[in-house]
Length: 152
Image (cartoon, rainbow, N blue to C red; front, side, top):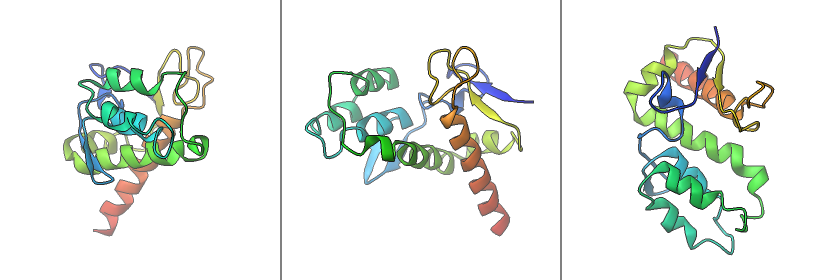
């Protein structure tokens, strides 16, 4: 049985990057994975000044809005690094917060899908044909954590 998630307040909402689970990564505290991810878009870019603004955003939605501004120039290697950046944030979140790590591990080997009606890259989109990269990252993080647990 596939596990679908999207909204933070819904079942499996902790899988969302908007969930209120802070992370410490690259020497800085981030309120959510969304804050971290959106800020990384501007590392080494002409808009690098936005990193602190995004990091200090009061909500994940505010951070997302700042980072998604189509008029802003992103770092030149963004397309090559964005999946690795997302994975680092997601892995850090689930290693840091053992309560939600347990939820992730409890999904066993079931498929995990971000049920976004609009995102065909990170989610499945409205017609379920999207690439589901966030779901794939969650499943790979689940496997990595479970393998770490087996090694003791």
